[in-house]
Length: 320
Image (cartoon, rainbow, N blue to C red):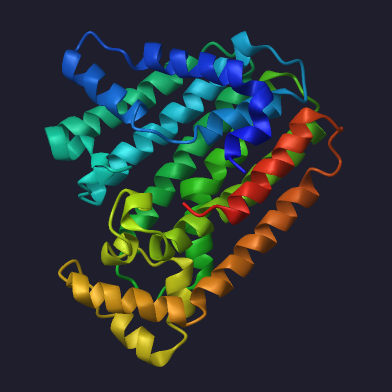
């Protein structure tokens, strides 16, 4: 089943948000506009705007209002990708050259800043102070997560708690807040906002764990970058933490640097896949998904609730 089938009833509103994103990222500075549009048009599931819309369905749904939140959340996500690519010195993103690969790091950083600024501009159309407070706090936490990832590179002594805190800040919070802000913008009840926040948080944790698994089991064509790229860049993910419980693998993993050869990495990836670490990581992801499904039980029945369940189940089974 394709992900979009779970929320096909939102297709017209999603198309409207896509057009709004194109309008917002346009700039009279031709190169800035071209770079932003390239990133926007390079693909992506737009899962954060979808969660905003679904959250809004539990209140007084008004696409003219809620679109501002959806655009803001997607722009923040896009900006973080640009900054990530600079930090990781990445040349490819979704199978295409990154902004820093085409125009250099300095221009890429300002493109990311431009997208952040446009996100803040978009959210000013929402008058509810709580929406601004939630978004501001989220950006702070996302930045902390990025800093933690830089600090923790090639730190093979870090523990599970460090990893979970990092992916919470880097991924889960933005998804949690997408669900919550959709409900806030629609004036939904506070208990509904809380349920949606926790649903998004648990789904976001599972989403990132699955991403980290796919870095080892998906193909380069599916990933749009070489398999094992996270480990090569020094990012210690859940499969790596589990694999290091085996002494032989731990010895090999802790020797990984940016200069590790393709052949060595291929051998190491196979070792990790054979160790049972992938299966253990899947089990953790599944536990988060079950918590997500439990958290929306109190919500009223309807298309939106069915869609939330459908999206969660898809994330747990996705292949790339």
